[in-house]
Amino acid sequence: MLYTTFTVGEKEYKLRLPAKIAVDVERKIGKSLLAVFGEGKMSDLPSIETIVTVLHGSLQTYQHGITMDDAFEIYDRYIENGGSYAGMIQVLVEVLKVSGFFRAAPTTGAGKKAKQ
Image: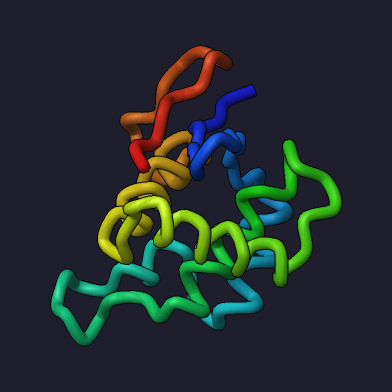
């Protein structure tokens, strides 16, 4: 199965959004996952709540039992370890690629590293 790898400190997470979870995330955020990025204007950028909601959904396939609170903690650790809001958006773009939202998805199950 396809996934992207997200490293926070010493911990590595496999991220992917299969169809059912993608639909659940879209219901929670009230729009399609592609609409999360709007038209590229600053006012269109996703809120931290939206970013963490997508992160939470993308963790569900390989990290069973991760709660929304866990996802907020992972995001906070990512920031504490030198990550940024903009960097997290790049991670989510990689998640969407391996989840079939863009044609550039990798074709092996080995995963693709998302930079911290």
